Length: 328
Image (tube, rainbow, N blue to C red):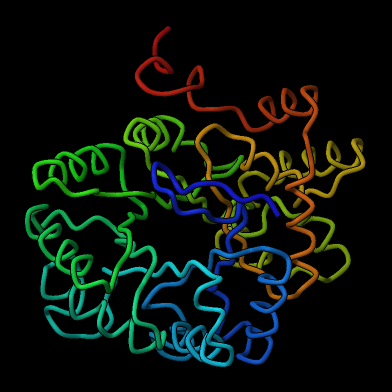
């Protein structure tokens, strides 16, 4: 396993992170525990969750699953970096969502109880809340850091200018501010290259990528459909995208086969090769999924393949950050 620093911090994390969105409803608790065991054994030390995960059972269920796993072997808590999120609705109450100081503090306390831990390593704002002033957000986050309940603060699904405004407000308070941004990024979803990735690099944020295979679209979906083994890739984001990008995905799978590479390995390796990317989040349902993703860490994609991928999945405009990508 390759480890690296999370942005400008001294915190070291694995270049693959274990995403837990499938825990509860798709992966039952005993198998979830085995997956976390296997991931840790293979060197994956970053576990990413959210207070709303597990909604197929009930919101908060996934944090409880992770918490019971941590409790089974208390030494694990010092071995792993636990990241969770705040902001999405946890109930029907007027103040049960968003980034008010009230909700941030209350949600953190609730996540700590579910996780059975004294601290959260990376507490991420799940979505921007433009109704909450940054002075209020940082007041709450600084309090949690001062109390030792949160080590670092991250963002998720932010725009580039949200990162900039968050950091400007944090600097006014002499706070560390954001240390990471978690965004959707893949060969199919390249818009973060315009402003999110440049902003993250400019402010020293580690970039955590969710859905590097676009919900399974880039994981050999056509082959799996032919063999009847498609599960996640046969529904949701991947299924909708397949209708639009079917011919391109077919060409992509042929290209991978021509190079003797698995499509999932190519898609993940491409994300990991991009400048500024700290880690790719994987959402495994089996130990084999973890082992397959680990192959991407050892896969150096040849320039000929990278060039062809840019033809199949072109960047926005002329490529690179805005506004240069728009200039003609």
